[in-house]
Each structure stands twice: as C-alpha cells, then as structure tokens.
Image 1: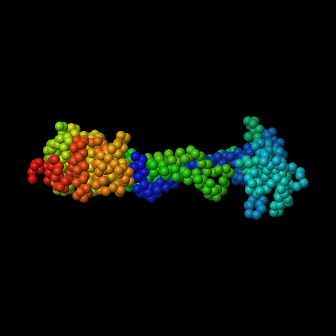
Image 2 (image 1 turned 30 degrees about the horizontal axis):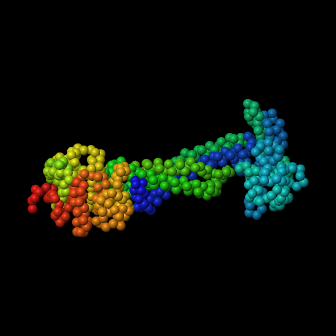
Image 3 (image 1 turned 180 degrees about the horizontal axis):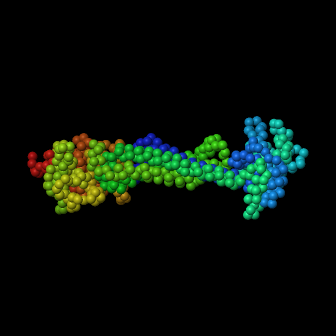
Length: 395
Length: 224
C-alpha cells in the first residue's frame, strides 16, 4: 500500500517525475559510462601493449609514444634504421632474441582505406608471438615462403574478413606487383588482425627501402646486468632509440588513470545536480500535498511514517532514473564507443566501453543513494508538519 | 459509565498581531462514553477549535483535559499520535480522501500508514452501506458516499471516540440526513461516542445531547 501510495503520488505529476528521473538517468549514465570507459580503455591499452610482443624496440630517434602507438595500431610514416643493426644487436651477449620489421601503409582497393603491411622475418617473429596461428578453418593456409617466385602474404583475420580475400587469391593492388595470399591467421584480438605479414626482405624490395627497417624487436637475457649492459651498447652505437614497450604501456595507462579523479569529479557534479533536482521535485510535491499529509497525521500516521512515505518517493524516482541511465549506457555502449574512437588520436583495439553487469547494480544503487540524500530534506519537512496547521493550509 | 471527555477550564487563545483571540474560553465539559453529542453554534463560535482540542490535534492554552481517561495535558507528540491513531476517529467536512485510491484502499490507508496489517476495509465499508462500492474511486462516488467512505475510514481503526467536523457541510439536505442517521445508528449499535460539530440546527434536531457554543463559551444546556 505504501508503495502504491508512493507510485500514485509520483504519477500525479508524470512529466515532472519523468524529467526528474531523466535528470538522475543522465547523471547515472555519465557516471557509469565514464567508469565503463575507464575500465575498458585500460584493458584495451594493456592488451595492445602486451600484443606488441617485444620487450624492447630499437627504432630511429623520435617520440617513443608515437613509435609505440604506431607499433600497437599498425601504421607507417616512421623513420628508418639500417638492417645491419640486426646483426650487431644479435651479437651482444645480453640480447637473447631479435626480430626485424618494416611497416608500410598501402592504399587498399576502392574506398577501403589504407592497408598495413608488416615485413617480418617469419621465423623469429613467430618466436616472439607464440600465439600466432594459421586459421584452422582455412585448411589451405600456410606460412609465407620467403623465396617464392611470387611475393606471398599472410592476412590477419580482421583484414581477411574486411576485404573478403581468400587463401591462394592473387591480389592486384595499385602500384604493386601481384601478391599471393598464402594464409590467414586465427583472430588474435590485437594488431595482427589488421595487418598483412610478408617477408621483410621482400617488403624492402616491394616498398623500395633496401637495407632499411622500421625497427627491431628485442628480448634480453634474464641476467641481472643485462639492461644496463644493453643501455651502454646503445649509447655507443648512437643514432638509435630504445623503446621499452612495458614502460610506454604503463605511461599510457598512467595517463588514463590520472584522468580518474577528473572523471569522478564530473560524475560527482552530475550527481549533485541530479540530487538537487530530486530535492526540488520532492519538495514541491510535499508543498502541494501539505493538507493531505496533515490528514494522514490526523489519522494517526507518525512522523516516521510520513518521512518514510516521502523518502521512498525520492529513492524510487532515483532508482528508476539510475536503471534507465545504466540500461542506456548498456544499450548505447557501441555508439558511445564509436564516438570516443572518433575523438581520440589513439584508440586501442577491443571494447573501449567495457560494460559489466555489476555496473547495473552500481548505477541503480548509486542513484538510490542520491535519492536517499536528496529526499531527506523534503521528507523531514513533511514529517515535522503539525497536523492541524497542515490541514488548515488547504482551507 | 466512564467518561469519554472531561474538560475543566479549557482554553485556547490565538495571537493575531497585537490582539488575542480566545477561540475556546474556559469550557467545563463532561461527556460519557457512548454519548452522541452535537456541537452547535454559528461560524467562528469555536466548534472546530474545541473538536481539535478534544482530538489532540491542538493543545490547550490553559485548563485540564482528559480524553478516554487519559490526561492529555503534557502528553508528548508521540503519545498523542498513538492515542489519536488507536482510539480516536476523525471525519472531516472535505472528506479528505485520496482521489487515486479506491474506497477499500482509502479505508485501509490509516492503518497501513501505521504499519497495522489487520485493517478490514470491506467490513467497515459494508457497515456504512457501501459493500458494493469497494473498488470505486472517490470520483465514482456521490458526496454522501464519499462521506460514508470517510466514516468507514475513521471506524477502521476501531476508535472509541469519533469526532466529526461539519460532516454534512458539503452535502445536500437529504444526503446530510442519511449521514446523520448513519452516525446515530453507529452510536446505538457500536456504543461509539460521537461528537459532531455542525452549524445546521436541522441535523441537531434529533441529537440526544446538544451543546451550544457562542464566542468560545459553552452555553448552559437546555438554554433556548
């Protein structure tokens, strides 16, 4: 009955109730989407960083974050280093493994945009990326043969799906000789999904960068002094830069984490505005019902009963708003994600807005908390009304 | 027979700017349980104020008052609320029903507000002759029927004293007589003490006991 009475009262001013709930919904949506984005973005960055597969990268001097970003997303436009460095680095005792790579962007067919070609030494590259496998549903798939008569490529799963290219298909791309699709990879959820792998020497030849590389991926030995020793060697070589991918990833994550307080502050302000809106609505509702509340009191309702009645209205309005806002984020997560991707320079792969069922609870409970706070004042106002004065106010 | 109301030197004074208004001016009153009294008097005589004092909706400025054997002078708000909810019933001139609730829900409302789940709204609605209007909302009822719902609502907490303030003030003559007859019948059959304020002398015609107020003063009973 109390619940019905509450719903009846909220239904007396449906537009006002709806607008108030929508205000709360907006605040809940803001808070939940910010949290979901924060969580999703961190996971996606962490995944992208781990997907690079190299502990260290040696590149031409430049912004390490730009280099790391290009390595994570696939792309081109970087400076080059001499391929001889591969042998030099491999010769150091502290270096366990090396793998050279050459990145190049090529215009795809029609309006498909740019394709990223990654020239690699397949053997060493696969050693760095043990999880890289040929697609099981493509039985004809095989790894590229570096010395094949026709240049061969292996497509990332995403690229194959987007272009519709099949194994053994001969590709005719603008400005390039015919390329044979040797295989297609299993989806990795990372950068490799979107690139075409080919032999690094064939890539040098194809893209006219003889003797040049975009970078060299490295793994050091576990020896305690390995890092220090390697730094010394790099200093002696000069003209190159070492990018610690873990450190870059951490830095990127630090940047995201540093926005946490700001995002929470924004969500807090939205919540405060919503709580004031609720307070205003419920307060008005109390003022309009003073005579009715007076009758309730005259009929024996205690202050606590009246307080509960009004307070529940506030909590219910906010719970509804919280539910609407959270469900909106859930439903519109894809559109929010697309919008976020269009706004940022570097958007990692994977879901940026990571909605979890627990957010539903967070949104609704958070909104109810807002309602609890926003409802206290009007509920108290109603509870302290003197029955006689309240009844008389309606005469 | 025990006393329902015992008042000695009961006063209620209001301050209006620099003036003081004595709405109830030193009333001595005894009403036994089971009596049906009608408070008569012109508008502004103090009928409603006296009813509010007797119903613990207001506190006297001076004097002593006992309601159903409880001295209400110095009673805390909580105790007054408890006494009001458990042993007193109110009927208002304006009915004061919640328009969106059915007759059944309106009658159950006071008990539910107090967390009492034993309310039997159907029983009391049948008692006032509205057994076939249980699920009607106030807008689907006539004025007389609405007042009957209000009376059923007052009865639902099984009070020992029913206070009615101009219970027929919104009703036409015939409907008013019906409501009055209902009150008289409840007084007879349930032994319910009823004090009803009215300025309609026709309704008071058949009341067993008439109390006349003028300018806050209770006139001697039997006075013309």
